[in-house]
Structure formats: C-alpha cells, structure tokens
Length: 374
Image (cartoon, rainbow, N blue to C red; front, side):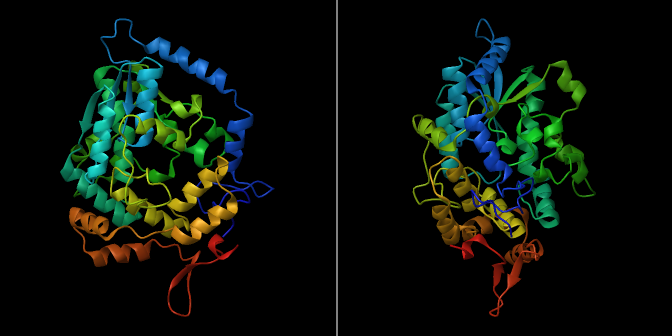
C-alpha cells in the first residue's frame, strides 16, 4: 500500500491521488484552504446569495438545512439562524437505527429554535433496499445516502424553498481532483460522481421484490422540477472554512453531547453518534480499502496542525479498523433478516484480497500497512 507523506491516508481511498512529491490531494486541498483561498471574499459572496433568499417579513422559511443532530448540523443551524439571520426549515432523514444519544442531540438542535421535519421513508421498502445493498455491494449505507441527498430537494420543491444549505464538500475535505474540490453546489452532477452510490440511482435497485413506490422518497427529482424553483443547493464549507473541532465546540453550547464511553470508531468521541449502521459502513470501508475511521480522523488532525504524523501512525496502529460493537451487528442482522453467519460471510466476500493477506496462523493482515512502520 502507498501512503501520503504528510498524512496517513493510502491511495486505496477512492478519488485520492498522490502528486510527484508523494502528497495526497486532500493535503493539497488543506494547504489551499490555508494559503490560497480568500475566505473574506467567499463569505461576502455567501451573504449576497443569502440576501436574495431571505424573506422580508420573516413569515416564510428562507432555506432548508438537512440535519442529523450531529455536531456539524448543529453548527450549520447556528450559523444560518444566529449569524446570518435566516429562518430555516430543518429536515432529517430518520434512520431505522437511530441511537438514544442521536435522539438527544437532535432534540438539542431543535431547541435552538427552528421548525423541523423528521422524515421516515417507507420502512418496508427501505429495509429491503438496505439488505440488497449490503449483500450485493457490501455497503449498508447506500439507502441512507440516497435518502439524505434526495429528501431535501424533494421537500424544497414541495414547499417552494429554493435554497438548501449543506455542510462540507467531501471532495474538498477528503481528496479529489482540483475541479471537484472547487465546487460550491451539491447538484445532480456532483452526486453522479460520488463513489458511495456505486453509480446507481434509487430506481436502479428496483426488482421483483423492491417496488419503485416503496422507495419513491429516495429518488432524486428531475431537473425540470428543480428548475421551476431555481433550486440552489450550497455547501457552506465552500464559503466558510470547515473544521469539525470548531463545530463541536459550537454545538456543545446548545446541549450537544459526546459519547461518554469514548469513540465508537476512530478517535473522535463526538462523531458517528446518531446511527448504529454508519459504524458497520466504516468497518466495511476498512475491509475494502485498508483504512478505517482512525485514519480519516488522524489525517484530518494532521492537516489542521493538531497532530504529528508519528502520533497519527501510533493511533492507527492501536485503533484503526475496530470491529463494530456486537449489539450493533445484532441489531443490524435482526433488522434486515440475516444471520450472524451471513454477516461474517459478507465481510469475507468484500475484503480486498489484493491488499489483505494471511499469515502462518491463518490470520488476516494488511500487506504494507502503515502501522507496520515507525
């Protein structure tokens, strides 16, 4: 495996590439954010856009904010309502695996003082889709992402609210080509390039067991419908520097709670708190690409100057690829109707054998893993 010389991210990560100096495009993007971007100018541009959509008499919703109750969505609500004086309608996709802590943090978000819709897709169709995506693609979170990205624009059309405020552009934060990093809008064109969807729309998953009307809310609106309302889906992270550490400190002001037992995955006790199944998604990412949440978190800390690469490698060695808690796996298997043996068989099916090898004890190990180097 090949790794970036500055962070701990391998080139097995989709969209991540190294330049001739061995530096990944995510680290290059982090440097651009610090040195090349005129954030004052971008924020002014953002304010001018908001002025176009802000209602004069405060009787209408000015924008939609997709929220989960996590620290980032609380930060977004704080910024839009209390800093930019917008009147948002907050929209949540209600996962079938919401945690107790996730529910508490979502309540804290609403207590900022916003209207909120907790949208539950058809549970029958959603469960069947989750099972199919897991068994066929080794990714239980495809339905979640379809829901997260499709429900807000559908409600934007239904309520005639053109402006939708998303969080960060993942391509800017985690690595992609320059033309993909420098994108301000979450459009259908952007969605079509996201590896998480496996190049499929919700409609492509329909078969003799999954009916289209069962997953209708996961289908993305057509361009004609969006054009009628002048749909404007913005990444706030394009206009204001994005930093998860800062976001969590702001979220705590409004009652956001961390996980007292410590991180469920990675090194952050404030991330991946709202849904049990995102942890399973991260574990399969580790099997497929050879890096887990710790690598993601550590690389972020290195890019923000809060950790050395040596410190990061030590943490990767200690915690990366942590197996999901047994109760999470049990809940998942019972929910979609598979046995634990089927779950384990699927983990083996999607383990990338080009990077995973077996030792003399018949144990799996990553060939060329950064954790083997000091």
